[in-house]
Length: 87
Image 1 (tube, one colour):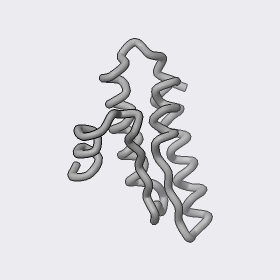
Image 2 (cartoon, one colour):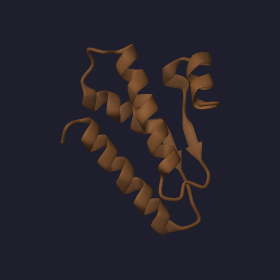
Image 3 (cartoon, helix red, strand yellow):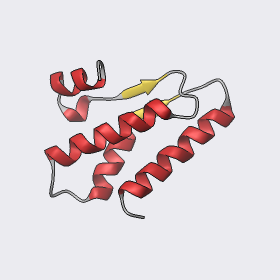
Image 4 (spheres, one colour):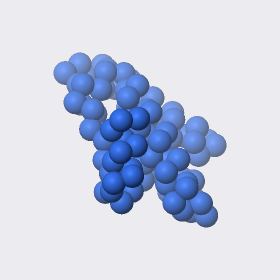
């Protein structure tokens, strides 16, 4: 709430990106994806949901020293995007 909401209020939506330098299993990234997708839906309500989900995915990134954790985060983001698209 204290960072992403502030960024969304201060910057154009297309300029906002989220980087989690210790992403672990991706909990923070999933929250950011959900918020960015909701922001895109408010900004472009008639756009295809798949396109908006892709934009939100493109705006989040994470790294971790544990490659297994990164794989889990990547999988969880994929499932979240597929769910958001109704797939």
